[in-house]
Image 1 (spheres, rainbow, N blue to C red):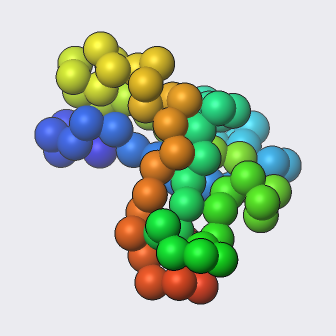
Image 2 (cartoon, helix red, strand yellow):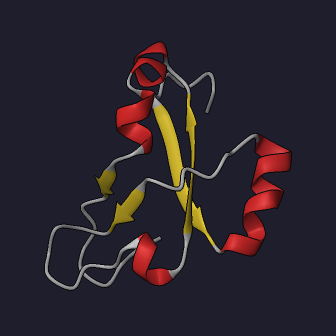
Length: 84
């Protein structure tokens, strides 16, 4: 991912697994970020599912926008009921 040209990577996991991802891939928890499946009513959300959000900022652009990204609600634009 670091060399792919992407700006940032983000995913969710159960809180007990966060330490593993932090150790093996330097994926820190971003407590103020929320992932939502979509903008549809009833869409799944990381905060209501009890998941933690982990994120890495790869590009200079993402690092510059770090505070905005790490405190954002990120819409994954998935079909209702899907949240991977």
